[in-house]
Amino acid sequence: MTTATVAASTANLATAPAPGLLVRLGCFIYEGVLLFGVVMMAGLAYGVVTQQRHALVGSSGLQLFLALVFGVYFVTFWTGRGQTLAMLTWHIRLVTEQGQPVRWPRAVCRYLLAWLWFVPALALVQFSGVKGGWPVVAALTTGVLAYALLTRLQRDHQYWHDAVCRTRLVVWRPLRRPAS
View 1 (cartoon, one colour):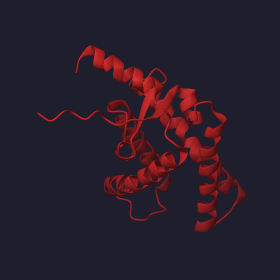
View 2 (cartoon, rainbow, N blue to C red):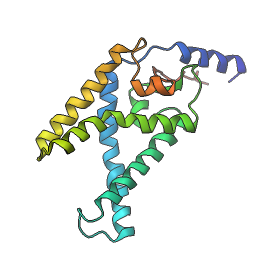
View 3 (cartoon, rainbow, N blue to C red):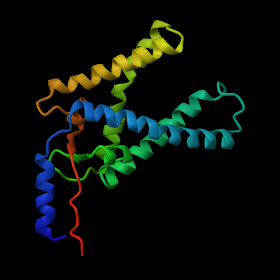
């Protein structure tokens, strides 16, 4: 790839449109499906290393460990090619506002602020004393949808954590190489 081609593709990323909300939510759900496998492998590793015999014993340590594993997962993919596997499938890429690749400090900040998807709903559940699976699922679903709808208040329809971190989600499809 020539320097002119790289500059042109970066310029395209700086002006590329944001993916639609339904596409981003579809990617969000697919990411959750893929993360299920990551959680299973990380949980198994944690259980073996700590010799955890009961799910409720050491659950805070497991939660902290999973948050760290998720952080490594997302930051690695965002700083590498700008996409997780789910984002690649849904043709979404993470770039800076200038269309440049995201570096690790910005990716870490984005990961930490992305917890805004869940923290308000989880705090509401915790402090309200609600018990049971369905009320928690309802609170989380409502919180996630409310957070996603906040994109309508942003001029370029980006998430709030992207606005703070000066990153953008853009529609991106790789250029096809000509057949030789």
